Length: 106
Image (cartoon, rainbow, N blue to C red; front, side):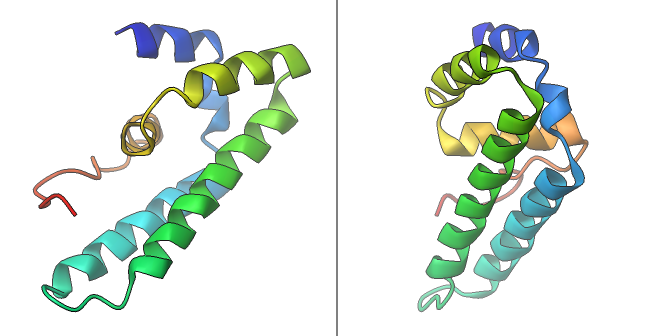
């Protein structure tokens, strides 16, 4: 609850741009591919790259749309949140499926 309240103060919905949605969708596609491989998975580098792409998309959007003070406050709060929770929160705001639905932990 506290996380949601703090992020709403920063108008997190303004960060749901086409670039952020595309990065979220790319992570979903890679997650789907991960499910095809059980033992030898050749995709870990792609998963890391997609996570980095999402991080960059969110940070650059925030920097472009927030004042310096807002951005600093946002980053302090955002960086306290686990990346999986960040992704889940953004998916919820973007109207995309929960990335953890019916998935085995990686």
